[in-house]
Length: 228
Image 1 (cartoon, rainbow, N blue to C red):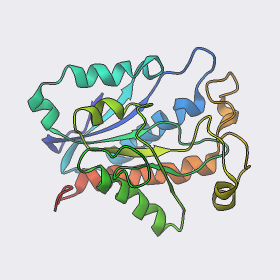
Image 2: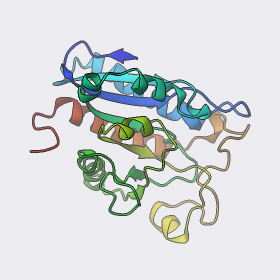
Image 3: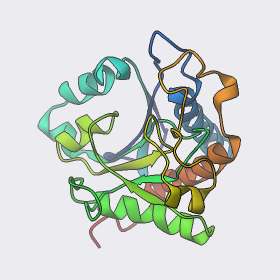
Image 4: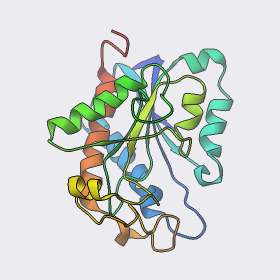
């Protein structure tokens, strides 16, 4: 965990990604892509001398692949008052899949079965508005509990983030919108030995990385919060 020097500690923005991989592979996309993205954001914020309104905590989770153990432990040791101090959680888990889609977590539950806690819809909106400003399409992805946002939404903390796809199969409609290969996995090397440095789509990494930075800065400096 690494905290910004400034910002309101009663409004804590946790920006997270998991460091671990499965034993079978080196985990460069899953999740070197996400952890390197948030490290770069932290370094750029420091270099630019950003003064956040909310305190920003960069979290590099351990043991995600064994059941979200790092993030579960983090949430599990908080008191109710400490949970209430958490402003939001952003999660970045796989953001450079070779056959990618720009998936945004469906905070309002309009396209998937589960909505996030109050405020999650606004986080989804930050991402979607950014991508729209860049003329880049997005697609919703569900809060299915497979990554480290799970413990946060479980205690009512607003959450959101990005995902470029794992073992799921790209549809023809998605291929028409995003390019790539219909009928193939978003990441054929997901949880495999071939998830090496050669398994990254740098175009996806730049596009989703820029969006991650935009959302982090937006939530870090917002004056109005989620409910104005």
